Image (cartoon, rainbow, N blue to C red; front, side):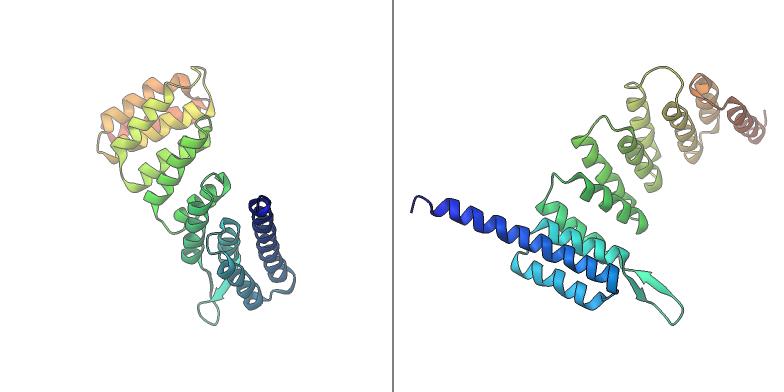
Length: 220
């Protein structure tokens, strides 16, 4: 009886390894033989054995994301909606897997679900707060949602954490904040942000050209 828990753990380890191997086999079948039906059947068989296996759900998501289905005689489509559902379940059962959240964010963007795109980047920031691309994704999510005031708040907060020297990141923050203000019909403020942010700009000629256009549109 004392050895029973260890034996059970070993059995579950083997089962998990088997299910992962079965899923990888299904992807190889699809990639090599293009046997879509058999590949999908193998993945779903693995999920029936363990419906909470994050690797299996991730594999199903990858399968749906890359498989093409006929929409008409001449058009094909990828099943991003089903891929997103599979990745969401995979992330639920394997919440520490960053790649799942990154893939899920891309699927939200492909489906124009910008709130989902933003929330994925918010989750990524919580796990790796030093990644600038996660913060940019978070801001862009707000921008695409049309939540320009929130986007500006994040921009201003994040800018304070950066080195003061000019950089691509600081430059893009200036442009994005200016675009948000334009979207809010605050053209004078957009001009001010671009003018005051010149010290952060790497390509000053392009920034001055953009500033001249804004001055002209504002009748100055």
